[in-house]
Length: 166
Image (cartoon, rainbow, N blue to C red; front, side, top):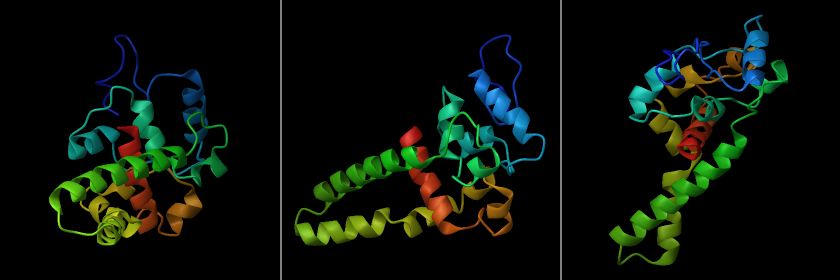
């Protein structure tokens, strides 16, 4: 992390914001070899998506795969699953609204099918590929070794979580 969004006088901790102190404790634990960290700085992801988080904890939380908590169980932020839920709802609303406006002659069933195709995880994973989103995920070493950084479901869920975090 480049520290450009930290309060004055705060020393940046790589990949995690300066507060709360429980986050620092979890990072200290993870630095001892527990949990697979992102492969790239989060500031790079912010540049790619064109959004700078005022609270980096929201971005970090959006990138925590549930497997990470098996190796760092006291990680203060938890997994990204709740943000996935929120992001899925936000995305569904935005896509529904756009389809409603742009497809005036389309029946409800057709609109639902089209929305489903646009918001499914495979489609979201395709959006994540050019962002190299898998490189920014926190996950267990086992998940990483099993190809978790490239797994479409992990990337699609991270897209949903980032939308929820925004």
